[in-house]
Length: 111
Image 1 (tube, rainbow, N blue to C red):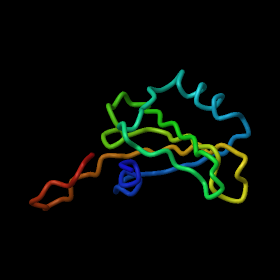
Image 2 (cartoon, helix red, strand yellow):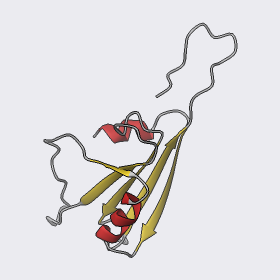
Image 3 (spheres, rainbow, N blue to C red):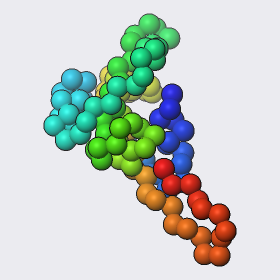
């Protein structure tokens, strides 16, 4: 998925929270603050090994058209893949512009 590469860009910080609220409650809260982003059609729904569907919602705070160009967005997911699987995880990704290096002849990548 495209957002995984963005997670590893220089200048990127990631913070995660967990919630016991329902997936719909968490997404509803963030919909009031951000624009929901729907991945391109054809993205396969992910399932756990036991067949349980993994629900995901992406919300963009800075008005960017997609996750690649956004500097601030969240992913809400249920279930969390880990020991406490009956919680929702909310992952905030923020990217800062990378300053130009002094004396460098090339321009650094800035998403």
